[in-house]
Amino acid sequence: MDAALATTALLMGAAGGPHCASMCGAAYGALGAAPGGATARARATLALHGGRIVGYSAAGALVAAGLGGLDALQAAAPIARPLWTLVHVAAIALGLWLAWTARAPAWLSGSSGRAARLLEARPIRLFRTVPPAPRAALAGVCWAGVPCGLLQSALLVAALASSPAGGALVMASFAGTSALSLWLAPTLWQRLRGRDATRGTLAIRLAGAVLALSSLAALWHGLGAALAAICGVAS
Image 1 (cartoon, rainbow, N blue to C red):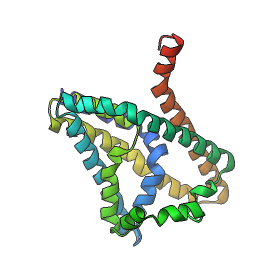
Image 2 (image 1 turned 60 degrees about the vertical axis):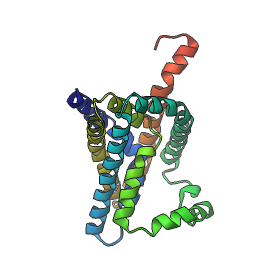
Image 3 (image 1 turned 90 degrees about the horizontal axis):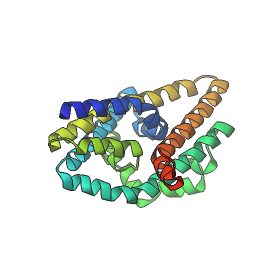
């Protein structure tokens, strides 16, 4: 049974790769961009994805520990749903902005006053003092707390496992296949950005369109059933 669940999670991670890349690819690219050359960047990238697998596996083991873990996940879902919805609405707005203007908004730029103040906040400054590879690994472990409908779906699959080890295997399978898209997205972005300005602009517009469409699809998937029930339409 656990092998079948792990296969399901593996396919979920592969099919959801574009969603993962559009939502988290930029953040993963930034966390993996460690100073010190290609070796340092590769080390930080491996640490980041390794930490993500560890964090996801731990979450899978927790929810598979028993029905109490599944009950806790179900109880937390209504609390996380408003935040999850707001994240996707903001992602749609950002994606449309990128697709229309082909440039990042001023507040997202590191040179803006608001972003500069955020970067100087004490928790951020403490996080930046950690060496690049351990810092990336820590960020990867914490990624299990990101509000994401796809992640919640994978955790529900892990909750059906027969043991905590089975739940960890399910989430490790999900993290492993989705990591491929998270690795490819920043790499492709860097190559496109390094070419002429026209291709760079096209890459930004395309990234914005993919971000908006994937977030819209996630919202519809999460809210479609509720809207259908309200309107009395079979979903």
